[in-house]
Image (tube, rainbow, N blue to C red):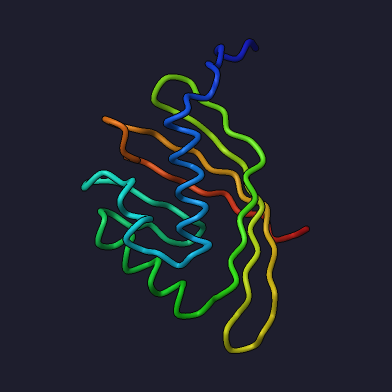
Length: 126
């Protein structure tokens, strides 16, 4: 089966993914939601968040439990307004001090330069 041709990653999309990574690393929920559309959908294993406020609340809850988040972008692939990315993620649980690592694949869709859909597939079995 032939895959559709992918375009070179547009600088604006590259910058958007980089902003998301940096916002998670700096625990900045306002910067996270700045790239999302009002009616966006954010899906991670076991949870679905609808709209900017739910996404912001989820980020704040995460930041209350974890610190030292590090994100390393490995790859971004785009085709018009749709894309995928891979990044490595690590963080530290504030209570236990345990450091977790994961590989994360992301599927996203943009509308007018904003994230309309963001779904993560997280592999913690490294």
